Amino acid sequence: MAMATKLGNYNSDINVTPMVDVMLVLLIIFMVITPMLQKGVNIEMAKTKNPIAMEDADKEDAVLIAVERDGQVYFDTEKVNSPSELTTKVQDKLSSRQDKKIYIRADARAKYGKVVEVVDDVRAAGVDQVGLLTEQIQKPGAAPPPPPTAPGK
Image (tube, rainbow, N blue to C red; front, top):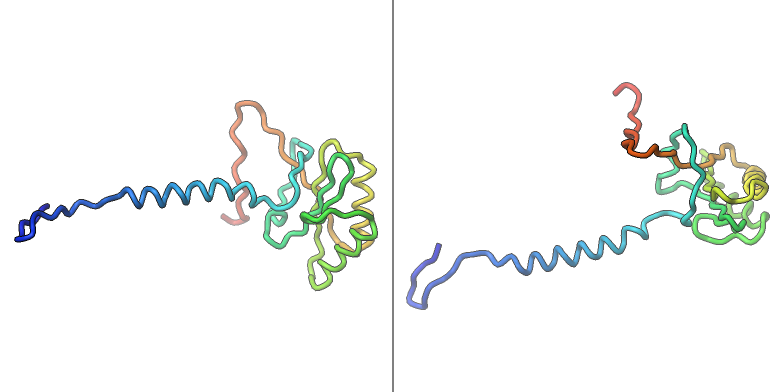
């Protein structure tokens, strides 16, 4: 609605162009940052038909070890050069924790012996539980499985 005054007509329409500009900039920022939010090293994990859900592996404070196909080992995102270095890093990270869990993400084409060596090094550091992370095989045309629900719901 316009109002007539001595100085002229005023238009009370809202100019949304600056708001759209800000929203587009935010969208671009989120699109660029989202791939960087993945924790750890990018690995093509082994695929299984009936994996066991390990929701704790997605938590912020989860300790992840990655084994690449060429045998390189990463503790979170740091490259580990020797088994003794891995054992020391695991001991330092878990020294103040009650729950001593480690999750290992091994490439599907990594040598089995290297993965066993990493598990042995982690056990030598005093870890109680080791989880080997895998991906579920998706059947062509099938919908993804529903998220697990808590008991009693």
